[in-house]
Length: 262
Ligand code: DGL
Image 1: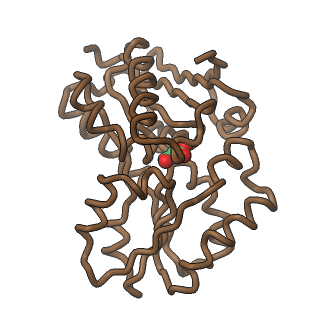
Image 2 (image 1 turned 135 degrees about the horizontal axis):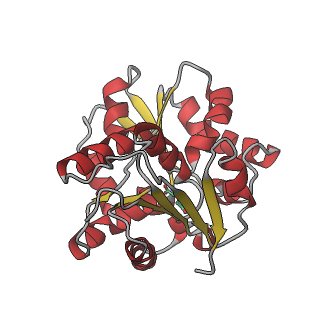
Image 3 (image 1 turned 90 degrees about the vertical axis):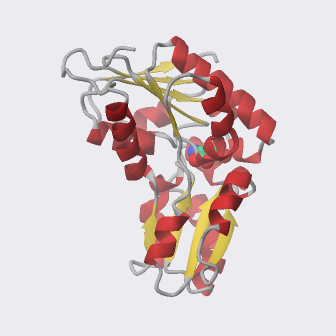
């Protein structure tokens, strides 16, 4: 495996770009290939087996492109499929899970909220993590029904989004949550709106930076960290309308976004 080979990143859609941005920030010398399986979003409503099958397809696509490490930039795919992927592919695979342990350490009111997909909240991996949290802490679980679809359709700042968020955050607000965990990589794009609804005293926690740090550590441990600034590329593949990606990545230079019939 050569250090110049790219990092492969996939998500059910464009949400994993929130992780890609953290990785690029921490590891600017790494080339990346991002696969947005938007045609099959949302994964959160699918069965475990369907999520595993799609994750296999995405992983093999990225391995075929020569990736040296895979980041599963999707909580739903991680919590349902990472065990299978790690057992069956012989390259490092990094996942993302909702940061409820971090929230449990920060809460003062003793009540934390988690906004995630049905697939993540129902997974045995998530169940195991939440069972390990101090039992005096109350966890309010909320399925973010409809949020991924609106983001995929470019409606991040729409009135539909505000209405939906107000309703999803209602119980957390009335229950005195002081930390809200974003358990889906699409949701960091909603932070300004969530802040407006819950106010600045509520801490919003996502796992993007932690995933980037873990990626760096695993590359170092495996002696796979890129050692040159030359010929770096960042390629995106999306199997649906690509204009939403164009908007989300507009501030980044030197990237190329391709439509893929996948
Ligand atoms: N970004 C995915 C996640 O982190 C969205 C899941 C979905 O497609 O429902 O869970």
